[in-house]
Amino acid sequence: KETWRNAVWNLEIPQYMAKASSELNIDEMRLRVFNLLSNKINKKRSEIFRDGTQTPVGLKIIFLAQHATGTCCRRCIEEWYGIDRNEIMNNEDINFLSEMILIYIKQKVSLRNQPKEQKI
Image 1 (tube, helix red, strand yellow):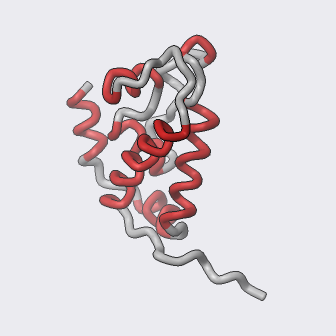
Image 2: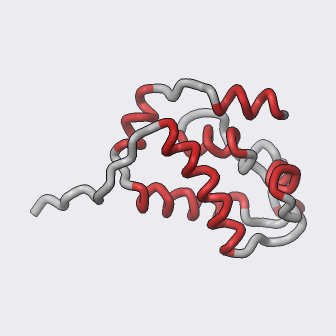
């Protein structure tokens, strides 16, 4: 497991992922991460179909970050962070895991400081 996490952590981010991520500011990315964890991962293990396979390996930087930080499935979350996979997580747990993901993302890409200006 550690070899896999290390490999993903050290992976060069594909250009399309870096570009898409750089369109967001930190607050927008934090909200996306929080919502993803709340909707996809915050279930009891018995309620997740094939826990351990719900997070793709590529496509989005958040998915890579989940694999690199052990936040990809309830089994890994329990193994890495001690959060019982048979219980619903509280907001404090989700915020903590979101920050772990954001550490990875901030090391890999530059997020904007401010929201995009709205065109009138």
